[in-house]
Length: 185
Figure 1 (cartoon, rainbow, N blue to C red):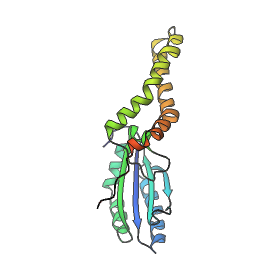
Figure 2 (figure 1 turned 45 degrees about the vertical axis):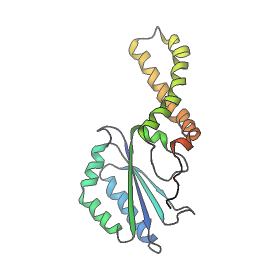
Figure 3 (figure 1 turned 90 degrees about the vertical axis):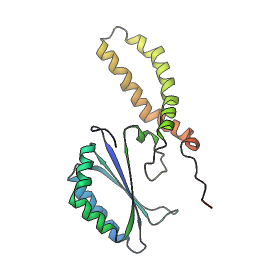
Figure 4 (figure 1 turned 60 degrees about the vertical axis):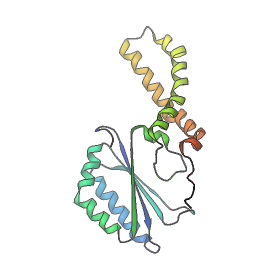
């Protein structure tokens, strides 16, 4: 799993039996209330699309891995999972750290590509920024104190990567990062 520190995103995907949608809705709201007691925040509900009308997605963010562990071990969660088995089937995915850079806007769940592809895509995005910052920004900061100068580089780099570069890189490399699977014969 992820580190002891840092946000962990839990994506709960359920395929709901036709006619049991209201059971799911009531259940999902109880999951939000119960998981919030373990630190979960930022709950998001994704409703079905035309491609898969039975699929429902609930996304919750925990502040750290300890909160997720406590939730996973709780009797409340066990009870809720058992209840949901009556009207749906389950699929859980988790992401922590840089995997969130590899989320496409039209994807319902966070399914990161293999780590080696994440590394290469991140290098494609980071290298030009490092060159530009080394050439144009860092020389202007040469007289600043070391700790202050050293703070500028990661703040600018990570902000640019998260909000500008990686969404573009992920979109440009979409076919390579997320190859379409061929249907099995």
